[in-house]
Image (cartoon, helix red, strand yellow):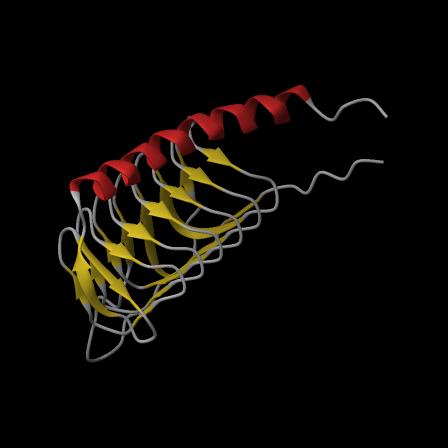
Length: 190
């Protein structure tokens, strides 16, 4: 017997996630509330994207890899807008990442197992290394690599490193097409 876990797309607070028809949402994902997912984005197996406390926006061709969690922070008296999570286009988010109340500009990179906390920003072509933790309010400038727990500036990225990240985005768009096709074909006969 082959088990195929389903995707949960749930309303919360009168808001239902808005997912572009060309986006790939893998089985096992849970997407809740005020969430917008753009064209050719991919959300991989067993991710949770919970827009219950604020909004979450995920741009075109962005990929959120297996087991990652994306959340946001609710409005507070000292910050009436709270911390929505805004993720631009062509962003790479590695497996088991934790993204919370932050901004990831177009072409940002978050390594596997990394944590990005409230009020942080990763600028275009900026990278947070695998396993790193970007503590509240920190900003990674364009083409910077930050590493460690807590993360600190390590060095500027080379042209080749930036190009490699963009090849990764294209690879995930293509891989999502293959996974969508495989699921449409259904399970192989026993």
